[in-house]
Length: 76
Image (cartoon, rainbow, N blue to C red; front, side):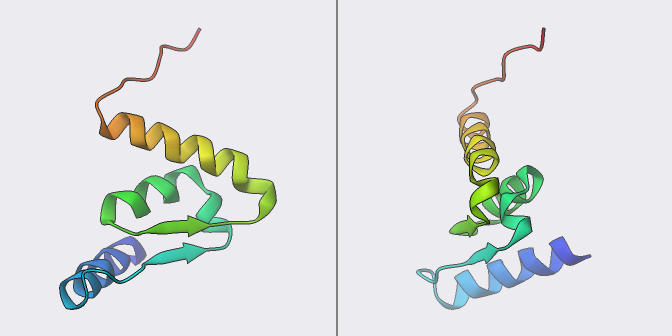
């Protein structure tokens, strides 16, 4: 539902203005699943509360590595 609407908005925004900055802010911006989704649909950046920044940075780094084909190490 909502994710599909966001993806449509990103697609239409980029087709109209390729250089437009697209972002979200708030608690969704600090959620690891939301960060991966936003990056996958082509958003420029996310922002969140200072308390969620460490988790958001880790999630963004993990997504960037997975996009490059780097696998996460197995859990012990």
